[in-house]
Amino acid sequence: MFDKLKEECGVFGIYDVDGHGAARTTYYALFALQHRGQESCGIAVNDNRDIFVQKDIGLVPDVFTEPVLNRLTGHMAIGHCRYSTTGNPTRENAQPLVTKYVKGTLALAHNGNLTNSNKLRRELEHSGAIFQSTNDTEVITYVIAKERLHTKTVEEAIENAMDHLEGAYSLVIMSPQKLIAARDPDGFRPLCMGKLENSYVFASESCAIDAIGATFIRDIDPGEVVVVDEKGPRSLRRHCGKKPSICIFEYVYFARPDSVIEGASVHQARQEAGKYLAIEHPVEADIVVGVPDSGLDAALGYAKQSGIPYGIGFIKNRYIGRTFIQPTQGQRETSVRIKLNPLASAVKGKRVVMVDDSIVRGTTSKRIVNSLREAGAKEIHMRVSSPPFLNPCYFGTDIDSRDKLIANNHSLQEIRRHLGVESLGYLSIENLRKIPVGAKCHFCEGCFTGKYPIDVDEDDQSKNIFE
Image (tube, rainbow, N blue to C red; front, side):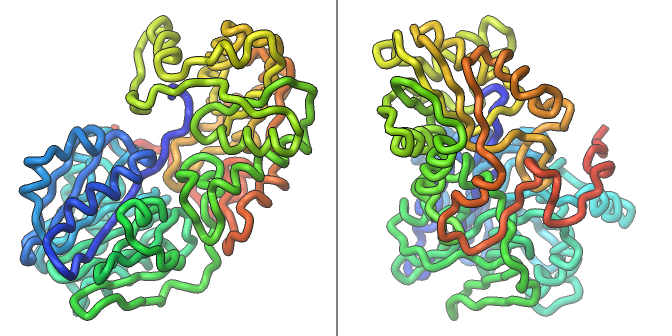
């Protein structure tokens, strides 16, 4: 919704040993990853070493009709659903990107954001490169293609390209003969591997592996490159060695609750967040409700810990995408009610604890609070299952500049008054670190603390090289 964070992107790849159904399997997997990007989507297929791509603006079922799927045959495929964190939401920026160069054809899909994209683009342009899009995925493709001129294999070129790439990138790459998955050395974004009968698959989240009936094998390690060809999978680990610093907001909001990331259940993590919220910010109330979808598990955790009954406070319209935005104030107010309507019979006359995952600018949160008040809530106590956003994200999330983040410019009490709630409580950073129970990784929490796992040139990040 209007000032809620956007998911980054979802990627999927399959090497289908037994047949030519790779595109349809990818289609089903993209359905499971649709929550990660709703601006555009695409599938590239490899049919006897010829690579074809179908991509467009829109949701998965809009872009891939039955006639389109019937035309996409091949034993390999990669897929992508996109929300743009760099580049505009145009068809040219939709993925996968397919590039023909002197060594053949390469298809690539990317989740994340390079922190040195502007620098690399300038260097490539000065050497004669001509870009067709405004996203950093094309930069990655160029760097790999350039390295491929001096290597014997595409996987060696990818490893060499990783020497030049900085920031977040989980990649699935398809050449005429190979399917390759790669993850940046810090492991900012998730990427995992599964097996479907004799086929191997890669996905941003384990929920996509579950959705196609495959068996989860493991997470791809930070810095790892996994190559699948007719001989099966093999791992290249020249860039491995760091423990993952995965975006901790995957557990709070981005990932689907039925996913397991780096050994930690997302569903359990959100309930843990609600539990710690109840410990940190107790209140006397009659009902606990969550703001769909990611606030629901946290609300359940709050209710279990506090003993306050859990209830359904909002009905969400499942047929409206996140891009359903109207330009005028009146239209925006109507849009909130169309997308998220309070259940008056559950909240009327009651003291309500309303749990949501975050507050960015505060405008959407205020509208949701107003709708709950209009439905008859006697008191509203807002609880947020993450700390206040104080800093931008440079690794694939559209957390805004500091001056637009409400917590950067207002005190807790000022935010409470702006939202119109009786009380307001955020999850502490100390307890946020505890919620991914069993996670085998470190976390990137720079949007909350300002401390990033790698150095970032913030001045370069703020430059718009397309103006």
